[in-house]
Picture 1: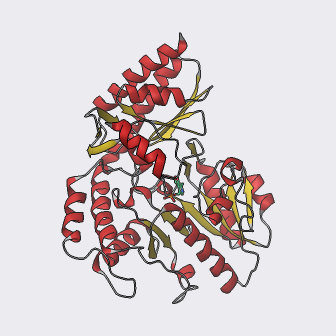
Picture 2: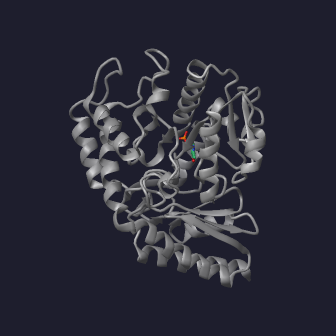
Picture 3: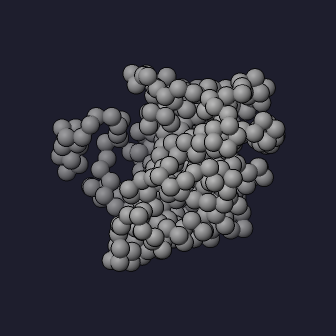
Length: 397
Ligand SMILES: Cc1ncc(COP(=O)(O)O)c(C=O)c1O
């Protein structure tokens, strides 16, 4: 049955995704089902989207109710779910204002525009240079691609927009050296996702904040992947007690419905006026209602350090495997954003885990990435570890 759909996809869809050979048709909580009725435990959660699990009843209810009331109108008018969501995110983050869009790349694109506008209009500094990190991933639009220094992603798409510079992550001296009087903003994922689960050092983010304050540079945190409860706090920056000037969100924000957000400080917001930026779909009632429900569920799920504890349990289990399989070079993570680095490409392990009924992923070629829904329980983690143990044992032979 699945073959027919796969053949049709190969015929009609642009061939840009290296897909695994399953057609997924249903999801509930931690579980997803393929078209043949096979069950999988989802340890990838749509690459960090389904943080509340699949089809969470509260999100489904909110979507249903909103779909029956008002799906879309225009940002020419006021809509209540958008206002409620802006208030909620501002209160949670400590930033002052929200702008809504449709994806992570679009949120970062907005963040770059807002930072450049503020620095040129208010601080009177031209240049608009943005410094981002090696191993970063900020999106696939031309500008966010320019902030994503991976040749594999950039090649063939030149010329990219100007004004981007890269430095090694967690290296404050390199950052200091890269700053010029043209620098407008520094863009960082507090936990790098696609780059292979690299966690910012505590002292590093503090030093970056000080540097930005000292030189009047905007600090942008891209929490598209590491935000919305993923690391055990609503926002990853809470672990560091370092606040950004601009924060970008997407992925898990809408509980599966596409939505992105840029949260920003009032001082930067003041540099923007009517017509400076906008979007047709961004922040529509349907997406905002789904997001409000999703944020409320996440607030519950991260209470009492529950996600942090689950993450520690998961990491300990992976470390036990690392002791037995010396081709696992490192295990690292924060909350439920976890990576296990191998000495070789992990694509085969991902395929074998799929056969055993587990969705995982491998990023940056060698890092097995685990981003389960925050509702994951110890029994699910134990089941995954058992299956992984078997797969690793086969590989060792
Ligand atoms: C940190 C980060 N920023 C931006 C993006 C781009 O988001 P989107 O795919 O929604 O455009 C991603 C996607 O993986 C991401 O992980």
